[in-house]
Image (cartoon, rainbow, N blue to C red):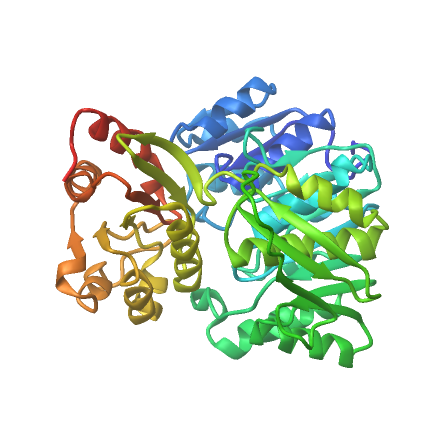
Length: 466
């Protein structure tokens, strides 16, 4: 028997439920009245949150947990050898990739999908919050929690669903959005796509599937390429950026006086109307994300410009995106998800606007393949920090590649700006030894480096300053 949303009426079991994408699906399913269970390798705040919603989220993978389930949903990080995947095969329980589940949840909704190599999470969250504040009660699935809310998912009663469309495994091609944002397109995930051309081709196909409007960044060569290809296929396109040739042009909004607002910008819309964007977080990339979100909801779904700008002004940000973890002895500790050289550069520029002193980084490379492909680029980006403590590679879904370690990055950096460490405790001790009053200390990467912030704050409080 099937539920009215196309999922089976019985229990749905999620493998890798602690991942942000999987957790969003679990929350949406639970909100629609499904019985949801799931497992993950380690406990986390995400699992605690899901349990508070009635989801049976457990630690560890045991084959017996699949018994009685009518569907298993899995993430790309889950291997075929996982005992619960094996058990599903033995029992003949249907299995579904995470993106298939999200596409099914979006069925019969007006979909706004946000794609791009960088900036997806913030842009998706901004668009979702604008639509919510405008009273359209959207559903959304974001690859990170909105700050202060503890979640990046919502099952709304409105007709619109906002999706962060993940390109890493090509799964964003399962969505056929009415409106799409392409923040930027820069080769990544070559472990899946193989070549840069294949990566670009996937984005061109994604844009071609849009039924209404593509909002693309004119400043980014990759995004501009996708915009041109979409126009060539007859898809509606609006571009934005600082480039004077963009359809919507972003510029500085110089305002004298201190009102606590960190970023002020003015956006001239395609029809000539201008709107001031007062944003609580610094950074050019943040202003670009806000512009994309505003254009998508205004031109795509009719939200008034003034209402969209007001919602952006109060937007609290997303967790793990230049997130302030605390301040001790005049040292600010930040955490950021940046795991690509371009993202690191953007984050460091943002951090410098916050710091009165230096910017110090604890960096954990993510994936052996990404480290091998972009070691030189990582080294150049991290060299813009005043000092980097380099941790070992976080493997995620990959097996080690012979000869690939974080030393591939460190050996390309100035010796006086990098220190390689073995583990978390050594990383905390090293970064605290470097820290001085006025500095920003940041944990950076897509792995478990995010867990170091509390330890750094404790060590700083105990008296550790360089």
